[in-house]
Image 1 (tube, rainbow, N blue to C red):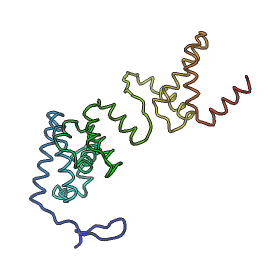
Image 2 (image 1 turned 120 degrees about the horizontal axis):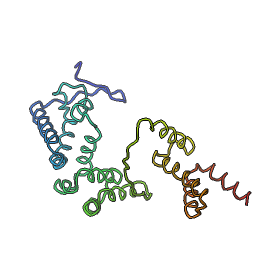
Image 3 (image 1 turned 45 degrees about the vertical axis):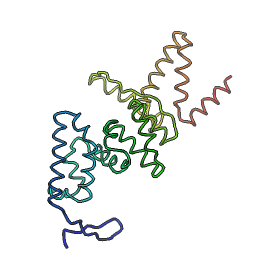
Image 4 (image 1 turned 90 degrees about the vertical axis):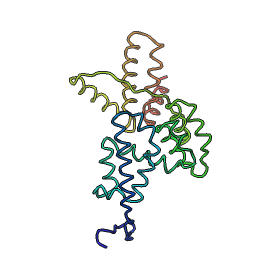
Length: 245
């Protein structure tokens, strides 16, 4: 039995599943076929993401990856998804968590929204209202739907966000990085770089507004800076202000 067993975390010895080589070769060829379409056009793979997730789950369950002469399923994914294995696991979660939603309906909303549906299904379990959430996925734009899911999972409202693109010369990067690192040390390591950049800008606006006597711009900038401080520092600042007044 050497080479056919593996140890689990609790010490039990499990015999590897009997390999259906014929089925394994077929499923692996379907994976390669779908991924080859991806090189030609993203639309093709996105239209087949449900099928791809199903095949990936079958490969893991039947240990078909052994036919590809790899040591584990993770190593198989590293070969097939060299850019990121995360999407492969997302596709598998869609197949496992959303069996009650028809394949055609999932294809219509797209893999990104289907991934969000899988998060809700995992959280809600048997209470997952697939019809209601599928309707939301169809009606809402992608980012708005993601915010709706985040609100459901965390119970908190989330702000809309954007990714900003601008060019910085290499000679400018040390100053930018140092400013962001310093802001992170002051505000707390849990703050995002975007939040740190906002506080740096707020500090700049506060200084400019103070020199120019522009009170309308000064107050919002100072308010954002105070809110951004860690709670102990914010309380100390407010106490100092009360004593001064």
